[in-house]
Length: 99
Figure 1 (tube, one colour):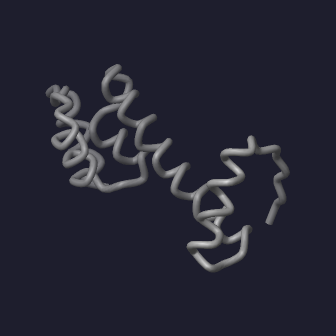
Figure 2 (cartoon, rainbow, N blue to C red):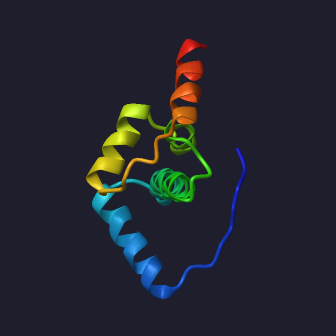
């Protein structure tokens, strides 16, 4: 396991300490939890960006986000992001399913 050191602005540290107190656990545990949540959210946003820019198929974007194809489709639906599904996308998705 690696260690990371960083400086935090006062407001962020204040909010962080509030979470530590609410969670009734140690700072390292809270930091790992928040970091995992942030990384998960970043991956989803990154996958959506690639999908909107047509740099990733629905299947690939779901893989990048670390969620199932059906979960990714639900995200697209909930955010009202139009489908960009081509014949090539269908063929690639079928190839992935066949693996």
